[in-house]
Length: 415
Image 1 (spheres, helix red, strand yellow):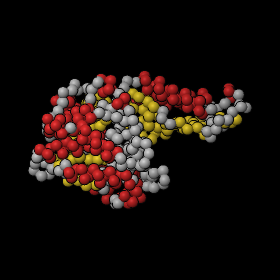
Image 2 (cartoon, rainbow, N blue to C red):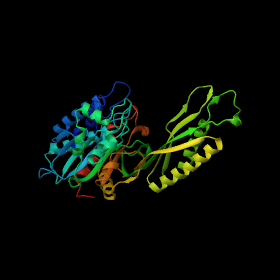
Image 3 (cartoon, rainbow, N blue to C red):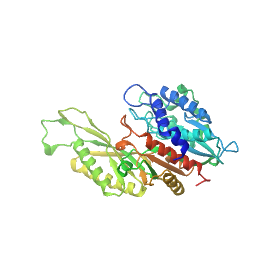
Image 4 (cartoon, rainbow, N blue to C red):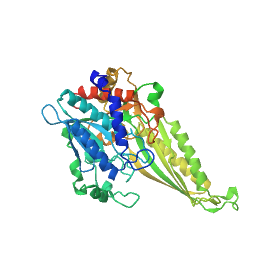
């Protein structure tokens, strides 16, 4: 790691800002900072101020992203884009998203402190809505940057019946101008993101950082099972049409099928039984399925097998089933030369480069439609994320900052 970063204690500095940003939240456990909320506005203005202090031109764009530009030695672009997201899930931790924003900002501050400009500009983005918690608009911030923010996002509704259009107006944005947030492809030469791992691999390997090779594709579905609600005490076991028991078998099938495919994970995250009474056989059950894999063909094969298995289970138990696929995101490989460059930067920080996939989705999935992407993972305690228990160390953060700065300073041209 560079002497400058060691002397100025980058890890502690970045973590202090993560803590300060984490205080901008809906009251309650952890951090709750949703898209187009009052907390979003306050966080965006805070980050924009820090960007200006670091020598960047900064603004809140037409979608609510915060965009800071540290211009090239010639005074403009093109730009290597870096950053992460500033929104959160409900009761989140302080580092999922903000750590990448603030580490990127810190790297620019280091360059500015040295009076150094590069042959290209560096753009730091705090994406407004990666999690999609409020409107179920996953990757909305990065989709705006890449010109994919359409009516489907503007018309999305939150739980209170407010659309994104309405919320943008209340926030002080013009929904009709959201297209102006899009970047021209010729002004972007790459995207690199630092993020907590959200998994236990780096901890198990006793490594502070890792090199991401790909972001796994995702298939999400809602399965609805309809049986026959009836009295819990009067219907013999062999005569029941119980959708909850069918759903239980399907959940076990998710585990069995996902385990049979390489590098594939499957999760049933939600089950709801109606009417939900202790003395009534349920009449209707909904459950969600989330399948992920680095290889789209494997994921689709696993999902197809699950669909057949679920249909057979439902038929055997005499219940009807409907499967609604609500998300199908393709896998996103990182640019091979970015992977190699990040591995070199990790070695320069004195760490063995471990290459690993990301099972979680990231803004890089949208950014990859415009440019090559790379990702740096920072170890998080026990792999916990989306929780107030999320934890990193200042030493690991400093290593991540040194890795990112080395990548930026040694970056050459497009992938």
